[in-house]
Structure formats: C-alpha cells, structure tokens
Length: 208
Length: 364
Image (cartoon, rainbow over all chains, first blue to last red; front, side, top):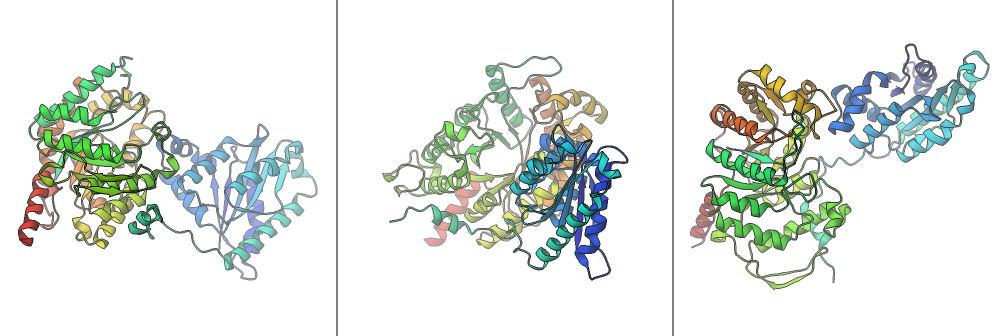
C-alpha cells in the first residue's frame, strides 16, 4: 500500500508540511490495519520541483525529478494534498503541479482517494477546501475524502485539530483499503492495446 | 541511410541584432538553404506547411517545384503536409505534379499540424483530427493507386468516376512518411500501410521516442510488411556547431535564450541533456546522433533542423558546410557499421519502381 503526500509549503520548516505529516502519520497505519506494517509513505515537496514544474509548461515534458514525482502520484493508493492559502485559493505552485500532471497523464488521479488539506494565517479562509480544492480534484476525477482539514495558525495551539486529522485520515485509510480491494480495471494503455486500423477505417465508412 | 534537413519556415527576429527578415528574405533563404543542402552532399530537404504568421511556407509544392528545377539529386519532402485540413484530392494532384517535374525526387510526410485554429479556418473540426487523418489518407492512397475512384466518406463530398491527374510518375506513388510526436494512432496508421514513420523527437526525451518507434515497428511486423527491424523510421535532430564547442555554446546561447521554441524555459545545458539538441563541436554532434540508434534501432532517415531560433542565413549556410563536410560523412560510415544486411534503405522513386517492375515480372 502506498501513500503519497504532496506539500506545497514554501518555508522550512513549514506548517503545510507539518499538517501533511500529521495526516500521514494517522492514515499510513490505519490504511493497512490490522497488518503491523503501515503504508509506505512518500512526501513530495513542490518547492524542490518548482523550476521543473515551470519548465513543463515551456518545454512540454516534465524533467526527471518531476516525472518521478508524477509516477509516485499515479502509483499511489491514496494521496494527501496540502497547500497554503494564497490570495484566497490554493497556491499557484500547487495548481501548477496538478496542471502539469494532468497534461502529462490525464488519468493520473482517476478513482484515487484524495484527502484535501490547507493551511492559512487565519481561519477565515477555511472554505478554500470546498470552494477551490474540492472542485479541482472532482474535475481530475479523484475520490475526495468527505472531511477536509484546514489548519489556521491559531489551530496549532487550540483543541480540535487532532480530532479533524483523525477523522479525515481515517476516512482516507478506509477508502484506500476499500478501493484497493475493489480497484477499477487499469486504464487502457494506448501503447499496449492498439485499436486495429481496420476498426478505425470501418468506423468512418458511410452506412446504408 | 538518408541525411537531410527540415525547415519550419518561421520568421524569427535575430536576437543579436533585433532585425526581423522580411517574408521574401525568409522564403529566399529557405531556397538558398535547400540548394546548399544539395551542394554539401545531403540527401533530403523538407519544408513545413503553415497557414499563420510568423511562418511563410503555406504552399510547399510551389517552393519545392522551384527547388526541384535548381537541383539534381536532392529529394524534396515535407515536414509536414497537413493531411487533416488539406483536401486529399488536391494533395494527390499537387504532389503527383511535383513528382513529374522533379523526376521522382519527391516524398511526403503526413502530419496533423500543431495550430488549432487552422482546422476551423479550413472548415474542419479539431476534435476529428485523427479521423480526418485516417479518412483523408485512405482516399489519397486510393487516388494514387486507382485510375478511377468512386468514393464516399464522412468529411468530403463524394467522388464518382474521378481520376486524379496527373497520374503518379511511372505509376509509382510518392513514398509517404507519417509524422507524429504523441499519437500511437498515427504510428498504427503508418504500420498498417507499410509506410514510413517519422518521430520528430527534437523536443522530447529519448524514452518517449523509443515507445513510439517500438510501437510502429511491432505493428509494421503485425501487418506483414517485414520484421520490426525492417520498418522505415525517420528521426529529427537539431544542432549548432563550431569547431570548438565553447565557441558554439557562446554563439548560440543568445539565440537559444530568447527563441520562441527554446527560450525562457530550461537552460541550454538542461535542454541539450534531455533532448536531441546538440550545441558543440562536429564530433559532439556525431556522438549524439549515433546514440539515437540505441533507442530507435537502425533507421533510414535523419533530418536536422538547422535554420532555427532566428539564425541569419550566412550562419545557417556555414552550419550546413560543417554538417556536409565533417558530420554526415562520418555518420554514413558509422551507421553502416553493424547494420544488418536485411535492414532496408528508405524507399526512393527508383527503388519503388524497381519493386513494382519485379512484381509485374513475377506475375507475367
């Protein structure tokens, strides 16, 4: 079982990364329970990929480190995505990563359980989860976990964040376990399974 | 193996002088480049086809006909002919005409184009891109092989008792390559007909090119045209050379950094590492080009993009001297080494005519 955290935090240390780690720490063992070994967890820091993400738009293909990150996301059984709130939405870097991913591999997130999370300086932006992140991942045909987790600065010193992390991570783990056993058929690979040319020609033939 | 050049035909300002050539200058420069290609011993010149600025070559057979009259050996080709938005009847006629004028020194590369609005400008729907390529080429293929064609399809008015004139030279249609960067459907199309497949790999990493070429080779064998190794493969490449590699990098960098296709993205160093672009000495170009065989197998046609990024004509002609004198002779020798005897050369009019006569002889 593989769990991938995509963190768009910029500072080091970053509260966005911290929230991603906290969510993963609960989701990874829950996804594989009762097996003792937790899900393999990999964290992708978009800060390290910022230049390659930009270059994907100018040159049309991802660089090596970014291509590796895309593979990890596509192969994950579950995804935790965490962005800081910039200008009332997800950060541009966060959106650009998923833009570049969907250009390279349009089906990468189809049917994949995704936990959405965000951090901000104030709780006033908490609906960013439902106004910005949820529609983005719905468009990408991910299965978005019902509970999203928003952490404002004040939440790190208040009661309640732990509970939301537990609930959201538990929901993700359940989806990972559930969808992993009843996984949809793998996407058709157009390189492996070619439509025979006669079929293409026949489809264009006038009828009657 | 054939070596040649292909031109996009872009009018790009020279970033070192700020000067933009006129359309006339650019068109004449393309002709001068083609003539130079023959002079330095290259085999092929191919022009792009575009219908929007900043590109000039909207009428490839006009240009190629003019070049044909001024050359003797050079094969004239396209990179690419828009099989989606051109009328296949007009392609059949134009290129058969060119074939007669050029004494058979003609082949074509079919492509779908890279400019979305060209489809509506020519009355087509971009969402039908693949289907247009499939249907239009199926008709073109018949128009060159059957004297009288009755035809009905989805995209064009039907034909009743139509004969495309002139008939192909000696009854042998021009050889066709199908160019595609991303679409396995086009590799499949090339394989189905036993036509050539050209992967314009110039902006793509090797592993992607490898997948496309492998698919084409496997399907070529599936359709009974030969073994996978006998499929007809072409590749692109783009280079800038000086005797001394530091001089090449120093001179090309200002062009690379602002060129519409290269600039403002990865650095020159990153780009040359990940794509076929080579900026350096002739020896470096030789090494890089020879490495294509490692992932594409023994192939038939290598086209270089030389007039890119707004380089002035004088510089491009110097580049062609280096290519013809120092690079291609070595490539010919090296690519011939260890090349299995059953790997064919790219078909030419002469070889296709000989094949046709042999088949007739066998029947008689």
